[in-house]
Image 1 (cartoon, rainbow, N blue to C red):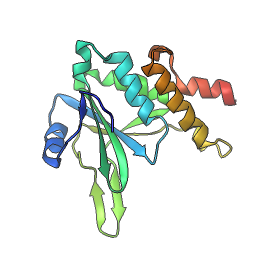
Image 2 (tube, rainbow, N blue to C red):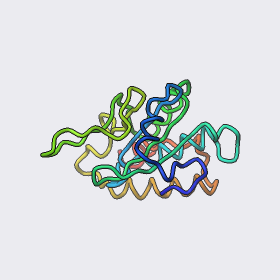
Image 3 (spheres, rainbow, N blue to C red):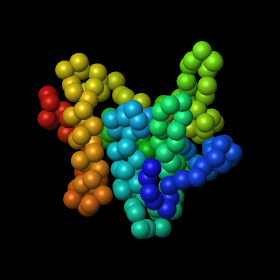
Image 4 (cartoon, rainbow, N blue to C red):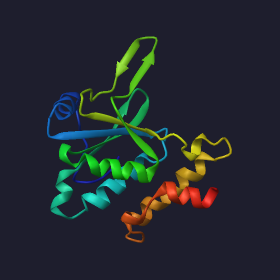
Length: 173
């Protein structure tokens, strides 16, 4: 779990429901484990570019890691009026923002995500994502993402300059 003062740690379903229905927020969720490459970097870039740690702006971002349907999901919440920030970062990470919540389909039926409202968005791969190329090794992208996150957090890389998609195009095409 993310250890941070802005991370929702001991959440409960009623709190997540209340937050999902608060009209001041937009929520971005993505598969954290098994890992969807780009989701962790999306969260870090959003924070480090627009809501820098140790600033007043950092109070405008909430993050949570939750267990749902045998997977781990991240939730990143920002003020509704800042939605363009999420759009900018999604392009840098190769993700698209899909209006709607994830669902689990099983023999029990269709189970919607814990936060189920019109203000919840799901992070998915864009068309032409490098992982759609059968010759691309997903582990390379996961390792690269982890290394980038560490460099950003240790101030070795300017988060404004990080563009995973441009980097992959240069390196692998």
